Length: 97
Image (cartoon, rainbow, N blue to C red; front, side, top):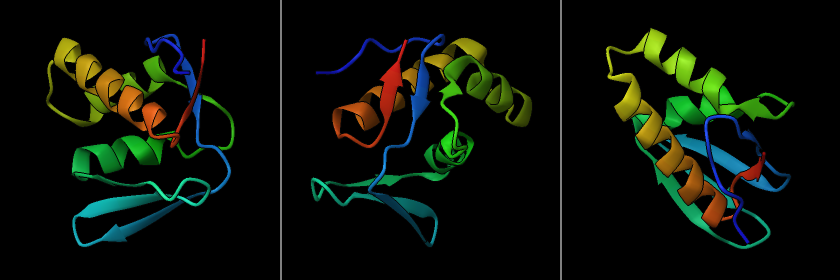
């Protein structure tokens, strides 16, 4: 069952997730479920920010993204939360509140 996702959520990458960069997209594979998932360059940057060993606060990820890219904060937050939800639904991220 999926946890609600918000900017105050913490996320971490569970064991058994492989990531491989192929040209301009990152392909994720969950070794436990066999699920493949690909990320565009923006999604790849988000994945890089989530790769720390400790659970990452989504607000901190949003803060980094808005510093690195010329992007509207509200739109960036919506896109970030949508991606995290999709990754969670595919068992590629664990979310805690």
